[in-house]
Length: 320
Image 1 (cartoon, helix red, strand yellow):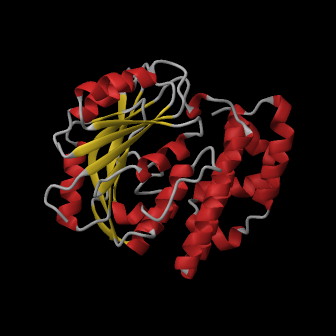
Image 2: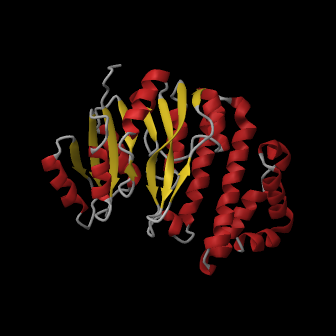
Image 3: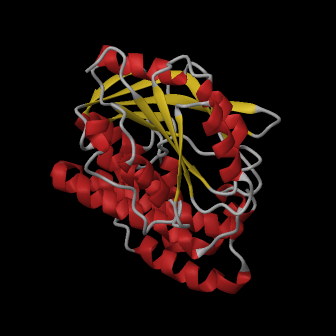
């Protein structure tokens, strides 16, 4: 690979007029200059498209693609198909990057031989920024990387704090059938195409919490897509590593439980009973004896509580 590889940064855009300038300014300011910025407008109804076109006139590294409204996954897929980079990175329109992020990630990949590089990030709410990073620093072979991914104790589930070598993702796509957790499935597939994954503790990406984000919304049926995603991950992981079957079962069980807790905290009365019954049936199917060693003591007893005294767990979670 060239010592000065091209990095394609793909930005899906939908009604982001409040934030898109901040992101584009942070991309233009990157210390790694050999980049192309591919903005895929998903049929915005505000001034987002016009803002991007204005930037394109002043900055040749920015490209603008318009598509009919199809969602973030389709926009990212369009960006990948139209990219030329040796590396691919992703950014969300309402976030922004440290100016050194791309350079640090590229140099790390070149030095370590890693196909995927992951960095820390800030949870940023305009008032304070909370750093999120792993104590672990270093290179992981594929199997160790997928184990830590399943345990969610190292890499995280998003794609925006990652740098991908093109070979890891040129044969995969974001699932347009998933409304949430499409990142999680894509990342699992990418890891299974990678020889090495490198994790650095540098905090270089700003993940901005806005009132219109998913984290601020009420519970809806799309939350079940998280379960669909992790079940698909289970299938592909077990196909590659049959010995990780129980660990992948634990990952599914944790996801079902997390969705249930989300229902307790956000669920409206109209749909609560239907969603609740489905999730309880899934929880009751969890064979605790098989997954116990992959659960903390606290989580194990919460699982027991759901299976044998669910109203108590529901009350406790509503209060927190």
